Length: 205
Image (cartoon, rainbow, N blue to C red; front, side, top):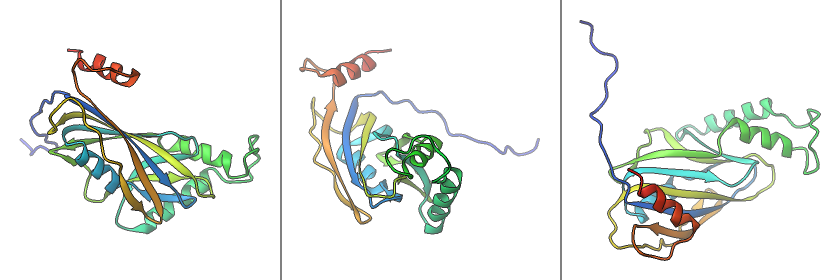
């Protein structure tokens, strides 16, 4: 028999005991990539995340999220070049009320992603050696962007609720800061719409 070319580890099971949310605010410098990896790592550590997954969702239509190489900056330069060729300015777009770079920015967002999900294993992001999480700004001018972060899984924190400290870091020359939205844990607590949704998910078999 020839040797197997594919292998996998034994499956593991984790019970979701918490859903932790936070809002990350990023001030971009204009078109280009902003590395968010360190901020996401800090978020899962602040949340006491052990096993589960972290979801990122950007609340915009002219900026996006991606996972790409973190070693050679020329990769990011080439990716911006490709996006520019796929959605150039001045190509006769009907939508031009917000400037010539706006419609191309919408197209570039559609071609990339507005949400990402990364596994968390043993308290760490399961990224590959050369992977990083980026916000991609598609407009020429600097913009203030918001990214919702949400971890679902098991945590090492005890108690019913946890207020996350604000995330704080300089991201490139831009700035990023987060607003703690806290953790939902089962219990007879006053619940907002978000925590009611979390409760319904946690009660499913």
